[in-house]
Amino acid sequence: MTAVARQAQEKTIQEKSLRQKAWDIAAMVCDPEIPVLTIEDLGILRNVQLFDDGGPEPAVQVTITPTYSGCPAMDAIRDDLKAAFTQAGYNNIQVDLVLAPAWTTDWMTDAGKAKLREYGIAPPSGMAKAGGHSGPIRLTLAVKCPQCSSLNTKELTRFGSTSCKALYVCQDCREPFDYFKVL
Image: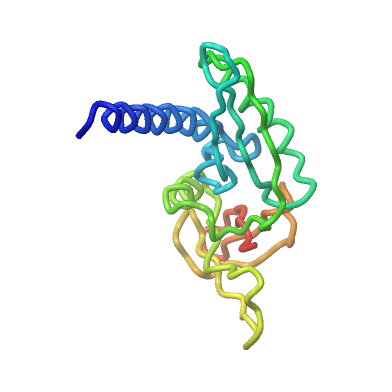
């Protein structure tokens, strides 16, 4: 390998390492409405890019997609992202909201769904397959109670503490719980 090729390879590795560091900073930001979930768990962290702005640290551009248009948590998430990057020594941070493609619960990580369950919120069940509803009508399946795992549950209200959750009650253990709806 020539010296020029080796330098180019080292630069590429360094850039990937810096980008991974920036991704890791963004990925640790928690959802303000469900603080056990990070924005990576939730699937709203879409991209992190670095740009040379002449400073000691590169400029950062973070792209996020709200769980639904008008989600009030986006302002808090934007502020938390800027604070996390500022604390890590970055001075030029841009956070962009992207609405297309629309967020879907399919983007949630398995780890995020497990965290929801442990927190007492039933995770979304099934796949949303956004835009793919040209066929048989989907049936609503039973929602498993995150407390006792019973399927003997009942929806109390379609909208719970946030628009993306419904309020259920378990008919066996009698505990109410949130269900993160499939979107």
